[in-house]
Length: 196
Image (cartoon, rainbow, N blue to C red; front, side):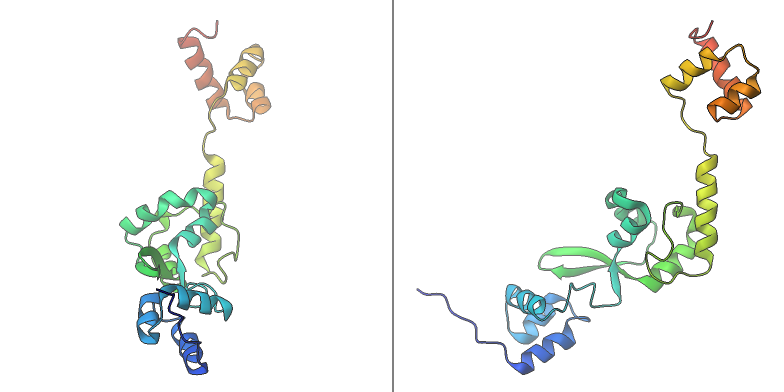
């Protein structure tokens, strides 16, 4: 038994592929063209149609979250879906589901759910044009992140012990901490008998 060759693509089929590509999933396109998934994907690639999400109004939820949070986004997709992000599962490839959303729908959801997002490290315009409220949110998140107390390290504790005879406000200035943080740490170390 030999391999059955598929007929060459006609101009009409290529025009139909170009029309269907942005709006329909691959399975639907395969059915309408009576072609295999591999054949359709290969022809779309050769025609330069781009990935399914590049050719539509949709973007993957993972790509949005990666843009906002960096590499730590992979585990966040389910959490955002569970929190009501109006994304839908799309079959971009056979048997694989990918969460996708229209960018305008993401912004609408994000505005109503600002407490669930942190834009502190989200660079301006990396998702294209932004609603007006995003810049204020970015600044607010950045300031809030700067105010968060940093963890005391062994090096910080050693420096605190070395500076113990200086006034607390001077120790705080040298360690880049508040006077209250220095006093609290001093008492905590003293309680645990690490500071005599």
